Length: 194
Image 1 (tube, rainbow, N blue to C red):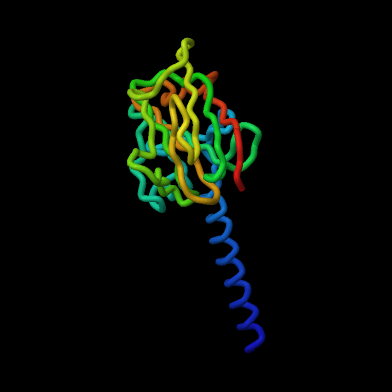
Image 2 (image 1 turned 180 degrees about the horizontal axis):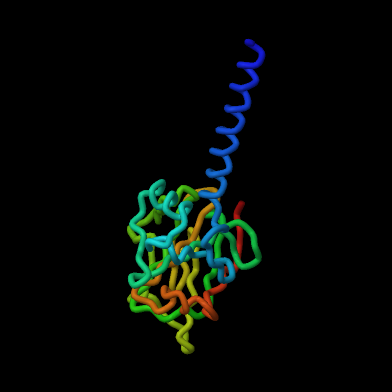
């Protein structure tokens, strides 16, 4: 009798622990149900809509973020560069290329817990579309790193893995048909001090 009770308790503990671990893995992943990837960038277009899947709703609840609706905008997150290597805050990167059409956009860096990284200086650790310098073909080139660089520079500090978050506001790509054929900028590692 005692042996059977212990086996039942063990089976329940394994089932609950395994279930919780698998949900945790899905919630921490930048891939999976409802995700749309364009190069190194991943977005969840349905996250702020009634059609959002349960995992997207759980991400919003866990992170405490204000999810944008389809008509409001779309956030893309990159946790790897264009070569597939994990982004690190102690490395220098260059974000290059064209951006989709949007009324306004922001770019900032976060740690893996989605907490924005500090710049370490008297400068915001974010860039937005109204302050960025553009190339003659309307593309952008942004340096990301700890040392100042001429042109567009996103200052980051710290050590360890990081994400880059690029959010487009009032953009046609947020609609269900707008995601096909969009072009996102590349993320190229320039130098790494790690």
